[in-house]
Image (tube, rainbow, N blue to C red; front, side, top):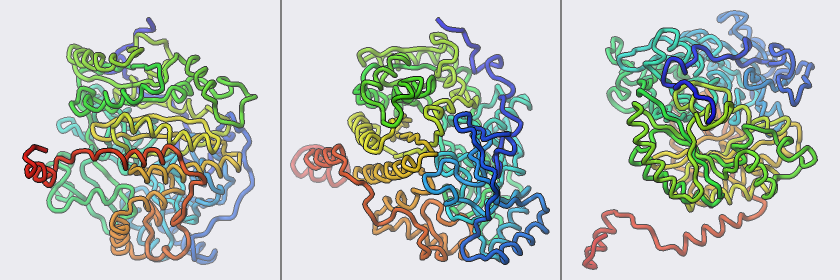
Length: 632
């Protein structure tokens, strides 16, 4: 038995503060605050200043005049030009200058600079200024959208509106409705520590993603997820304040009433529900947002199951579906591939030796790594909530379900040694933000990350096929395959993690080819991505093609009507304003990217064609059955 840990549901198990460096934040040149590159595996830093990348169609004279005007209004220190060396920094201090994980040239998504508003009124000024000078803006909360583009704009030369640098207050917390009102710069660390500081940290919990340095608001607007019962972050929002592309200010839901008694208690208000327009979009800049908090459930019982065989995945996913639908599994659980789990404990060089760099892991090497890390082909992490007797009762039912799988083992926190990944999950499952997920990013030197994030059925056979399909592409392009399934009641987020060496031009090229091929493979089988890197957004948007692209046409109509000058985040989610559509900035459209057919995709398509159609249980099927004298 390992160390006995204080319950994360009790005051003793919930730290007052989370340690992080004084320079924690997004910086134009991280090397200036870190004192080096910030990456122990890539310590070299750049020192040469660069020319500012100008917005499309703007010459230097017009640009300088426009910047001088904005500085005069907001103050000299409110604007910073991007003429700095391109240093990648790290998670604690990511760069504003460029995407540190870029698969394209480092300057391909470089902005012209950043502006730091301190209020909604400042944002209004910036938006009106951008309309006057036709300078595109790119809005970020805190700039840690790593793996999806970081702080970088889709259109090079855009001015980054860094909301979080100065707009970072918890505006209010209402313990009666378990809700709060936040500015964009409030991170999960900030909100957690604020609740502790005002004496509400045991009563009210937050839901956190894998890493706590991101913006609570920004993650919700990107439709990110966490791992408590409140894991659907956008579903927990309640009311927004939004600066529209013309500089007007709108409030949604009950916040639209000037004297609302329930601003964060009811999220619909009256009339059409417009909040979704501002997620993953460029139709407004959200400057305040309400969020619901999770009342303490009275207990949190984290656990882990391990399974010895790769093919166990099929049975596991099918077991999970009824457990999630019936809410016997209380949170959003994670089912992690063994090699991915092992990467939280060791680097690749430690696992297989420096001499084995340059080619993807073999099946034999994967088995050896899994054995070294504890022997699990798949590890399942979840938690039960409620007073101990209730949580333990639920766990017994879950245990009975998973123990149907031969070789299954169950672990609680007291069963594992200090430093085990389950201990980190225990914190995350009880709303305590951590940094542990940074460990697997040390798997290779100069590590950069891309996430492939399709939404998939909670179906065991399809889950196993997805692993085969995506791993085929990883091996084709020379990468180690990492994978985790986050399982909801009706769908799964199948997160595929591609780690590549950012100092290798060939690995950058191969990473892009691999991602584009997987997007094509997934689309053929009806699996669409919910979130992607800015370089891939045009291609992903193109896969949502019903009605000859009817959804994109609607997006473009809304964009052109609300933002006729196209100044807010052009190209975001593949939506281009009229002014940019003919500039040739779209990437990856109208072409086939896969260099070879994927044999697993071909097999699945053939099987689907030959398979007996699933019952629809719809009216037409019922009537047809009744005509034959039967039931549906």
